[in-house]
Image (cartoon, rainbow, N blue to C red; front, side, top):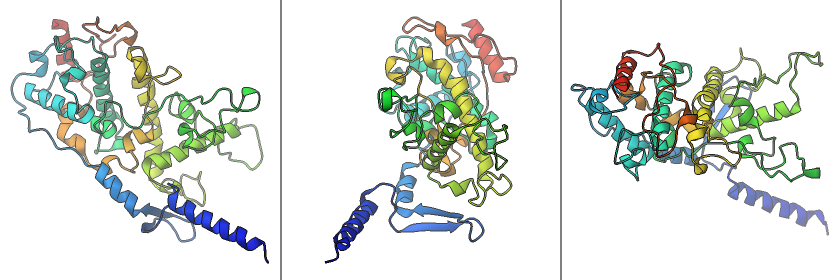
Length: 380
């Protein structure tokens, strides 16, 4: 009897079972689109069942009602309105109602406001929400290289939840694993490395701070110009896998398989992704990390850093968030451009005590809305 036959049959059965039950094996039907020259492997492959589920999960919520742009300004009617004081009272209330639906549909105004004093800054969620409004306005005005006219709203990331479903914080993993307690930040299933065993730290290195992702040498032999090492390459690879999973695309969306590093042969989406990485860094550096002092313990990671954004935070598994629906067009006056850019000193905020958290210094580049809001602040 040929002994190899039972082993071959067993291997075939195990392979068949794995193809059915493992999450990353795609069964037919699939949609295959050729996006490059024949022979270069430039094929975009989509699982039709996954696509149907993603379409269902990316439905844009409707506008609460059509607001009246006339009437008194919100900054004249309500106290301590720093960012949206230029809106009419009705526009302001409509946007507040929409934000509640987008971020905390199971609660009401009291999630961010003190019901005894709506103008108070004593609740941390109000302080955070104000800064997030500034962040949304900045994305829509300063980062059209990535978001174009589609733009973003709070719903792009939050999807009806207090905390966006996709966030990250520093992950050092089990500190005692490996030989003599050192495992070189790898050899575990790391969420920050695309669920691979590659080294942690891709997000900390490339989506925070300003470290370059470039690891590809321009010469066949070492010449001292490329200072990156193998760990840098592995962390970059982990980040690329995250981007692929976060956008639901393959490498060929941004790279030509014939020459991954060659910009001239890459699809134009690579430029959009380049700006997206820098946008993500800016959001984490300028908006998320500075707010750490106001966050309660259940809003920070195990290493004490605030929850931050990555590619999946906005994209949620599709190449264009919400399949490119220009949701912000219904809220351009409130979210389409920067109005008040002043930043407070978050270390001075005290829960239950801070009535007004004012900017450290007024930004002279702000528009008329800023001036109006600043005047209102002075009155208050």
